[in-house]
Image (cartoon, rainbow over all chains, first blue to last red; front, side):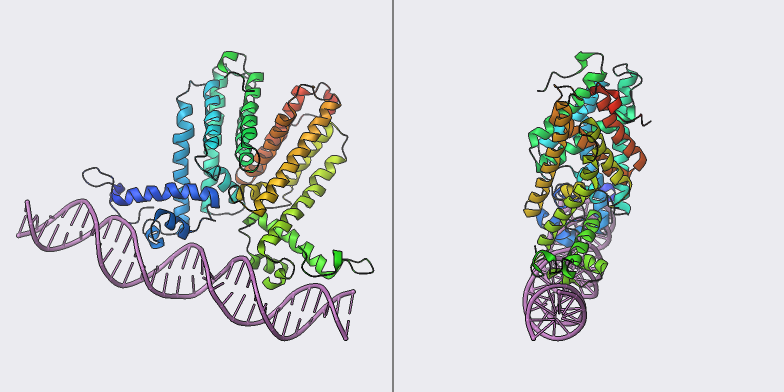
Length: 221
Length: 221
DNA sequence: GAAATAAGCACGACCGGTCGTACTATTTCT
DNA sequence: AGAAATAGTACGACCGGTCGTGCTTATTTC
């Protein structure tokens, strides 16, 4: 949502314009803070204070709070892509990539990159029953994530690393469920137990399904 | 948090006092509204309007918003007990009770008793990173629910309906994860698919573990 | 190369509205 | 009659948002 500023946020000699830098910094901070306080619960004053910027300065970049919220969701998707999906794609396709994805996700939670937990889990529950553009964007993000997970499972099936009669959507659902529950419990109960259960859950599933044990990581417990 | 009113909220002839009735009605409404707007996001004005009562009327029953939030959590636990745990306890102990619990939970979500989804899932994600009495109460609620789930699994093991080497906590974790994910996805994506995956997930697990197929419900798909 | 111009950017002050909360008066039930 | 329950009212703080102004930076002109 670029209201003013250089086109595409770069100067003619290719450097990143000042405004573009503050924009990104603002969104990065917004992702962190919104994960703690909620996407709606985060006040513009709080965000502005954290950035050392005035509230009106934020309105120079986004025409409304909702526009900033949408941009924050997009930024969080980028970060998820870089932090979770990227590493997974560097693993070999198939069961190993599926495991790498799940593992990267749990690692991301365990590293407390976002002290508030998971941006998407938190905001998706927050906007469960709040129709509007933000909810739609979050639903789209969830849909894309689900489709990606299913594709990874599908690839493992097509490689013969998982049985052909496995229910792809079902397995993808269960993997995601393990992760969602992990981030919630890790913030309210014992974190290590939560992470262990999330990892062990997928490991058990793969052990039961995958005929080739060399594709799986060594035992966890 | 009873500030005024008849002791124990009953009159001398045993009827429920007026204030006690409005208190309960207020908490019931608060559970519904907080599930939609968040426990913190719900404003006292909105709650008072819904009840046809003035804001200050609420302060006669609870000294602060936080006190009302804590009472709301307690009320939600009561409802969960009546709606989910109660029906499960009427099923035969063991695998059948475990299934009844999971099934009652999914039914509860599917019936949209709370249009906003699940009170506990929503608020637990909301208070993930907000230390204080409310978060502590929610953590306690989650801990109790977890312990209950684990006890049901344990009972099934002790009855010999599940193998003795099954990881009780792990299985309980996975069952809960299926339910949590179901309520989230049912509000953002296709509800029926979410419920089906949640049910099928446990069914698959039990089919793989339970030596006696007569204890399981008939196939779902 | 320097001066002038224009655009991008951020600021402080301020708006109407709503938040949670307190205090007092009045109605309603026991 | 007296206690309990509720309404009315006011408050200070904070909410999202607007506006006019000045500083900084890039581009153009001389």
